Length: 505
Image (cartoon, rainbow, N blue to C red; front, top):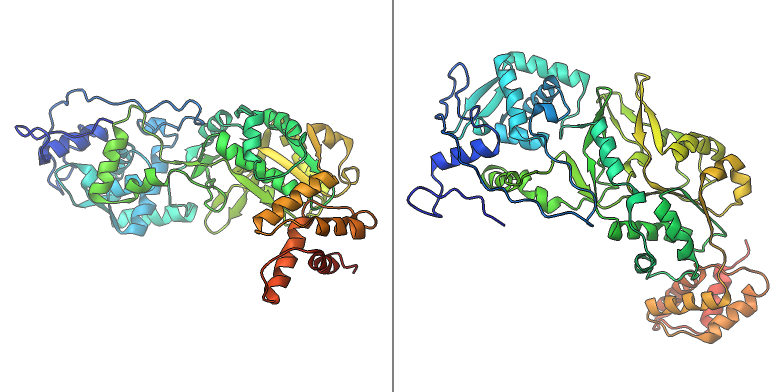
């Protein structure tokens, strides 16, 4: 990596002089003229005019082939950021209203926008007498400290009445749609070896991966059904692990702008960010932030910090799902929206577990998704009544232990391309699961215990479930701990555990 240092004249590699710092900041932040020219009115001493800088070598970012979608590129100016001048100004006014007075670099960091974009808005606000400069350094407006005037405070309060969102600048809806189409699940390379690696900690029937592989490659919906306790949820989580490991990382914005309304997308409760180290420097102030920005801006195509790099999301919902949770959540006090769960799952997995046991009826839920499943797009409605189109690009999985014929009709089943039955395990399969469960608990496998379960229950009154070994052995361990003995397995202990677990109520 080429270090971005400007040697002091006469001292190669030595400390930077003040003039060199000014040149570097002016060049990197696109402020060759603006940062070096005093603001009108003469409130603060301006930086001297700088001569044109010689070309600077800009190393290319390493190729991202095979590592997931390419990061969105930072806007080169206001026209490229997808926001109007007034929208950026409103965001800065609210920042200053909450922060009291802020450095230009602080506002750039909070908005996650390059300083040349922020600088254009600050210049406009100053000309409108909404902000004033209270202090400054020689390196230009990026180091000036800004505060609101009386008129600016009035304007800021008006902005808060319209929308209380204060955070990273939103990206336009069109940009979000384009990025979603670049990082679909359908584009993930899927092979048997990769699936076997992702499911290596699970025991399943050999041909199950043969059914899951084409489903992942298609990127279409999957309907998993079968008796309870046989691993349907674990299969869905295994697909999530596969996408996290082999699908590459994806990018989601903090917020998007649709129909002049702000909708938050990034949610740290469901999105696992992988760029925390990259953003560490941008959260710092002073020299640490400047150093990080210098390194970032030396790249030919610096990343757009309004986006977060995350693992492909795996969002699971169960009986608590309602139709309202699939629509925009509007906060009437703050006047902005939060995206529904299935939009946050774009690029990943959205699992509806225990399908058919939701508060909402299965028919109403399926009617809500007939068009999204077919067209791979959804329509969201704002509080104003206006609606807009968003991508529906996730691997959606319906998991149920109820009879599918009682839940859905033929029209809906036609739209679900892949139906996978996960049935009760055979005796051979069940034995493997029982052995693995003993090994995980450091207990010696006891064939007599397994024979007793089949003789007393599975051959006569009960169907075996893949989850039974785990549940029975947990009861055995609890019995041993209560009696003060080392956890062990024998026919008497498994009989006592089975009597409690299989009790008829």
